[in-house]
Image 1 (spheres, helix red, strand yellow):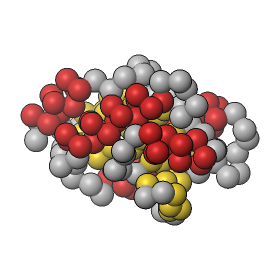
Image 2 (image 1 turned 90 degrees about the vertical axis):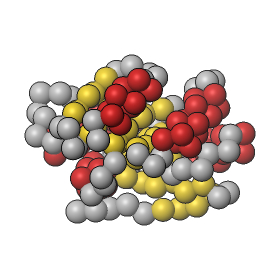
Image 3 (image 1 turned 135 degrees about the vertical axis):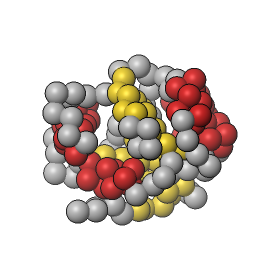
Image 4 (image 1 turned 60 degrees about the horizontal axis):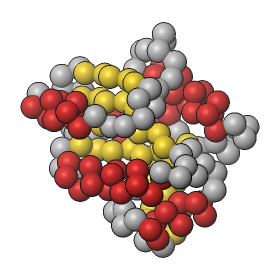
Length: 157
């Protein structure tokens, strides 16, 4: 079931996303998919969002980026949007029926998402690189997107 709705704040779309809707978006796209979790309340958030904006701008023809913010506070995202010109959707886990521990919610979200790929042993990640055409699925706990991995996946078209 696809459950994703949008609210808008100052020209940037924020989409609430479920494991099922994320999986469906990835399955329905011919592009490489990158999932990146990030924390908007971190002091490096403006710099990180700027990096995400550059990655999106340079690679959006071949790559779908899912930047998932670990927050329930839209005001944090609005503040960052004022600081950084980000022309892509920012996703929020649909945690309306979940507890307040966002990292536990992320872990639960990931377990559900990974089960949709048939991966029951892998439990959590911060970044995922998914290239359906080549069958490449890479999950990592690193904090920074590896641009070399993206370029390597793009060569596998």
